[in-house]
Image 1 (cartoon, rainbow, N blue to C red):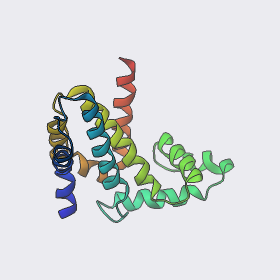
Image 2: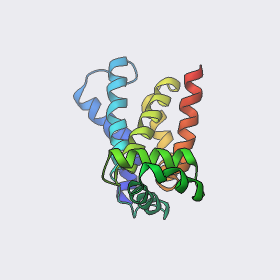
Image 3: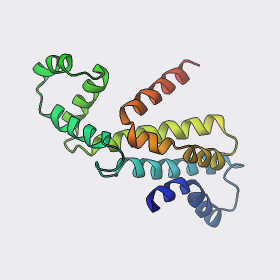
Image 4: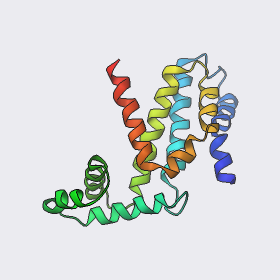
Length: 168
């Protein structure tokens, strides 16, 4: 519970640190805003990426085991395996590719944490004048729980956001 509360209030904790070190407001100085988002993004990525696979619902362990299973499949058998598993092909191919690049199954969480933190910070930077409040509200809405418990759905949701934001 303490870890969760630390995550929720991490935008305020980092903002307090910035106020102690810096002399100008985070929201008034564009460089401070970028630095702040970078630090908070790293904190978010660490909370999401370095969790144990038993944290959250049973899905986390499932994704961990999926990584291990897909890392043992040679490329010539990949399409047959994907045809027999009731999961999104894009997810299976992405995890297969990443599991052959990175050995440790923890990378499924690390890479998704980096991806989620980056997209969240880009969203807040583009859409919020007060980035501290924007991140705090985001954290309080339970998105962190969703990311931890619904990894595959979260990847799909953020991929759609990134795809649509690039069209503008």
